Image (cartoon, rainbow, N blue to C red; front, side, top):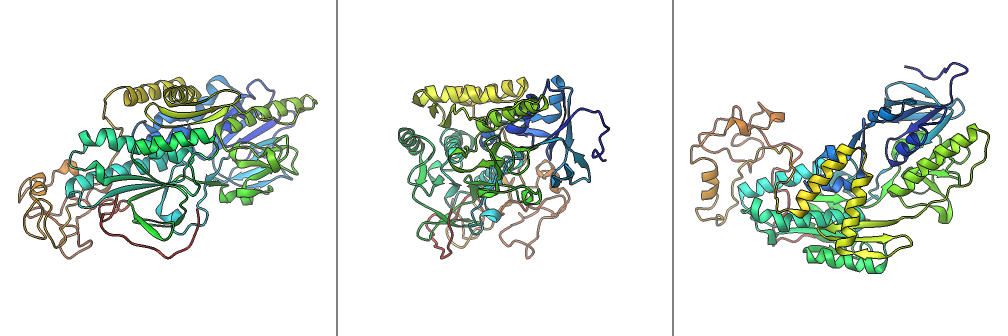
Length: 517
């Protein structure tokens, strides 16, 4: 498919790359313009990233915070959506090439592609940690968390459990607070087999405080609120290495952990280097005071992907993206009429972050600095109203109301792999019995000494795969007597077959690698 050769006399063509805050803001503000708009995104949906952590902590459905991009045509008939990833740009010919082979021409180009996770070169971080920047990543964190709790419930909590959150910004604080509340308020009911005092949420931050962009008063409140929820704060602590079973921090201290969530730092997608645009710090695209890409009068960059020199560099938040998209749309309309337009001026409305139920901080521009319940209510209202679509707003309102204002423990969970019984290490069994035997509760859960595995327990994604027999595969997996391997399943390879949320509580290790975070 080629759109490169538009017929003479047709309307100017505005191409918007990215369906996030900035891209959709530009598209919607071109609704009444005499132009044709093409919105390009590799996903068919917009993700409301500020609430991704609520999906990761089983409070919201992924559909609550995603919005079908093609729905933009419901009230705007001058736009079309095109699925694809931009591979390259030819700014002399004014064309962009997509991964599907499409060649799309433009008269004006708005780049609002967003950014991705920055691991700062920390050894093992990209391979072994879990970022929270996409819907699929939030679901991966959620499913791994519950898979490992189920493993601990079946096999016994013979070691401490730990989640490490790296980064003390808004995402890190909100994620750590939400996991802590899930542990504190829900696990006594939903996982009575587990000891919450041996379940740790650790937040690691290199700075001496959390929420660096906020005023000191609000930082202190957030710190105390996290500590009140029994979050293990490691401030003034850098991450040197992320391993499959934990992180090396500070003076080579090893923190065993089954899940490491990377919530610090962003950078431009690697493909941007092939777009023929100037890049600055973090790989972001350099723009001038009209949000034009430097050297290209008809190309703009808005939101996280764009950066201006000096003190005018904007924070990578939703509001700069929304305002930037609106500004560029107005600028394009002005230029089509032969009119000049003033430089972009960002209107700071403030920032906010929540720590948990009835606890938040709000730094309102030209207004008060709020903490506690009032700040939390404002945070709730703004986030719900900012969602796209009435269905999303209603669903999110209902789910968060049920979570925060009722005693419900009904977490929104997904599919988890089957749990494999593990042979005990030599030594006393958890509930008596000889060394190396399964404890009595495990025997009972298995239906007795010769109980059969129910067919309904087989994971649908792995149906028909045999369970390793004695002497094959993982030696820690024990097939109970009388269970035939046919029809049973192996643990999902994306989950550690061991107790993945932690390591032996009395075992300490150190690493000698170097790095920073």
